[in-house]
Image (cartoon, rainbow, N blue to C red):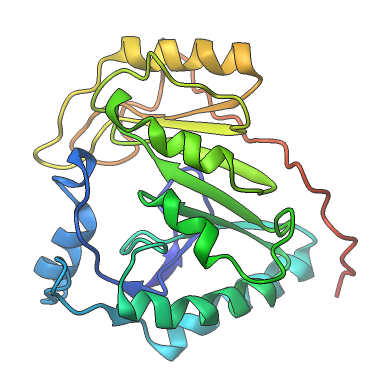
Length: 254
């Protein structure tokens, strides 16, 4: 699956495979599970379930996006992935990740935004030439409440040009979060028919913590039936992007 994304903080979404297993309360109303099951008729969720690698035509799309970005002289952001967890410990994921790294390496005009609930798996799954980080790869983790702040501590130890946290769905406050070494915080309430309410005081507190830490703050939306509803926080749209730690190489234009 690949498409021009409806996710506000990216341009396109790419899924190298589909399927996952739930690991924390943020996964309870997983839209990806609902989509693959109800719309595609696929049963890909759970430890014993298969994972389905996406089609060859899908894998060609980032190459096309890279060509478009180079032609226009305008970088594009690519979220990887909405229908799986790129760091899941699963045989299909392990076999497919090297192919994904090759694709990322071959598309330098794309800023790849990798997001996982398993940041402890980053260290063992980065390519051999990772060094201080590839300049076109942002590494992120999802944190839904104070109970999972340990994910930020793990992420902070991984070298990357951008480290980011997706506070989505926001299910509780992040009163104890340490944003040192974190470049970007995305805040969003849950969407969907069974959405759980986010307290806007949590978002205000997160915004204040970002200001104190020098972390870019991005308010995606309030809890709502559909995505992109309630995008204002206290009457303002606040959607900032991070500064990268590693300068981009000079890339020639077409």
